[in-house]
Image (cartoon, rainbow, N blue to C red):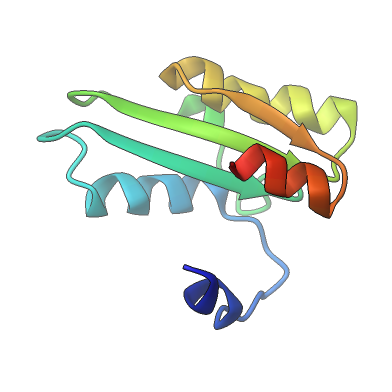
Amino acid sequence: MKARIAALNAKGKTPLSAAVQQAAKALRYTEEKATVILVSDGLETCDADPCALAMSGVDFTVHVIGFDITKEEQARLRCLADKTGGLFLAAGNAQSLSDALT
């Protein structure tokens, strides 16, 4: 997993909704239980609302980790976890991010 993450080339955008939808489809969430861990350092920037996603499936859960974001941003990301029965965790530094992922 570390090698795959290290190979990513960040573009500076935050397509949260599209990322969750893509993961859900890849995991065939309408057929099998699926869980996604979303790590974000900001709010959606691609004209979509992650809280408005229609994610009806067999059992689809999104756990959200807000990395180094404000309290207001945390509240806006928390709704996705709440909506799917997942956890929301805030991480302010590398150690707390590691702890949240664990």
